[in-house]
Amino acid sequence: MKMLLNAAMVGYALLVVGFTTASNAEDWITLIEGEQGLEHFNRIGDANWRAEDGAIVADQGAGGHLVTKDAYEDVEVYAEFWADHTTNSGIFLRAQNPQQIGFANAYEVNIFDQRPGQEYSTGAIVGFAALAEPFPTAGGKWNTLEVRIQGSEAVVELNGQVTVRMQNDEFKAGPISLQYAAGAGGIPGGAIKWRKVMIRPLP
Image (cartoon, rainbow, N blue to C red):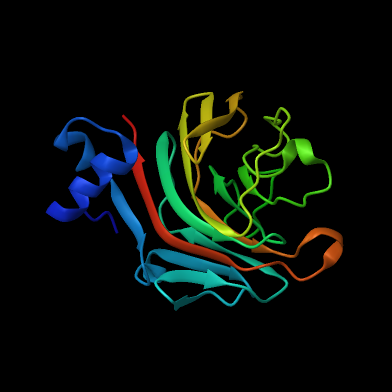
């Protein structure tokens, strides 16, 4: 599953992630590139994941995850995503049970502008690292989300701005997942679109 970037993608990784050496950029694994990448994940739940309009998209179902086939401990994640204003999504790290993923058994980097309890809305790590006001939002536009988790430390950046920092060592390793879920108050969740997801395991 671990694919190296081609020369064009190396240059792109240098641009978007800010690395200064090609050797670092070559460590990145591309999981989603446009409409390509569903084969890198196991599907859990009934979300209607599909390739559409240059991205991997879900917008119907009670909820579900795209779960990586490998587990990771220390890792960086770079993602480009589009969310609706009612979207409930996120990136889960170090999931302890790949068949039943939630914030109680993984680190959930949230994408949920309308979450009840805004301190854990978009850009937070639910239950572990709360946001400070003003709360960031992602709805109705393309965004970048970058996460670095190493040992007990994690940092989240949304659109180039640090949203939270965490110190916690409850979960040691596990798969990474991309979520689609119902919106606030049980309404249908808005669309989530992933047009690029890259990861880099850390030594």
